[in-house]
Length: 55
Picture (cartoon, rainbow, N blue to C red):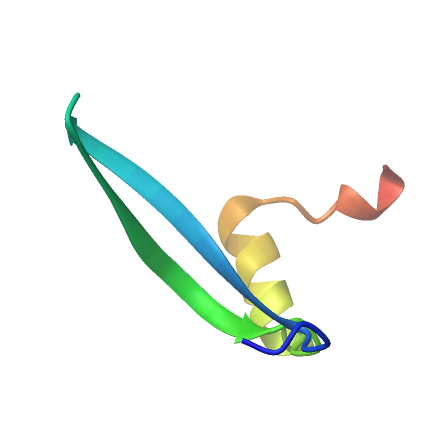
């Protein structure tokens, strides 16, 4: 991977056994990609977080 790149990975480790650790790539995307306003509105309606801008 290029060190100047804006790419990133979210990694979640699930431990099945004390001797076994397996990283799983949950999502890979460019940092410059933003969520659309339509998707954000759907998320806020689903999770009822419309007042988040007050923080």
